[in-house]
Figure (cartoon, rainbow, N blue to C red):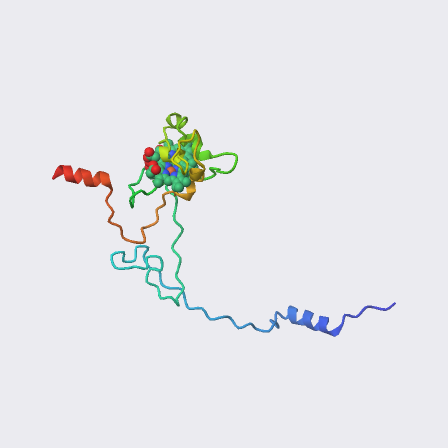
Length: 175
Ligand code: HEC
Ligand code: HEC
């Protein structure tokens, strides 16, 4: 009987493997600049114009901020600029919006809002582009998250001194 003898290269690589020897040709690692030291999320909003890069030089990798958590406190926030779509004061995990159903409208449609104690979408959401009022939500307003975003605990990246009209009127009345 003839015993099959493994060929020399196989024997050799097996021996090297057993010896724990790294025989693969060493790849030269591309040199990366070390990540920047952590910089506060706020940076210096009064001076910075590059809120997103937080003054990290362009050839240095930015150490990313921790991911923001969605807040679910039902506390409405003031607007940050005129005509801002209000931010969503509740979490929206698993709320489906697609061709067949719109979970947001379950609570925010005019007919259902009182039952869920939710603010109903304003009339603008029922208007088509010719300003005609429709019976159901306008196609232009169907995908709510196009305009409305959830609230997170992220720090503002740029300074903002916007004062909304209600506050302005209040100030005027006081004077
Ligand atoms: C289970 C019912 C329910 C569903 C579903 C729901 N909401 Fe709400 N929403 C509320 C209630 C109630 C409030 C009032 C504030 C609060 O109690 O959280 C509210 C508040 C809001 C506000 C704040 C309005 C304002 O004037 O400040 C926005 C914007 C909003 N929701 C958008 C959405 C969007 C977008 C979706 C779908 C992704 C959605 N909601 C799904 C119940 C709901
Ligand atoms: C094209 C942008 C856009 C889309 C899409 C949109 N909204 Fe709005 N939404 C706004 C703006 C802007 C306002 C504030 C001014 C106004 O009422 O028109 C607003 C206001 C609201 C308010 C507060 C109404 C009030 O009287 O305080 C609610 C609640 C709301 N939207 C829910 C929704 C829901 C639910 C959807 C999806 C079915 C949706 N929006 C889709 C832009 C949008």
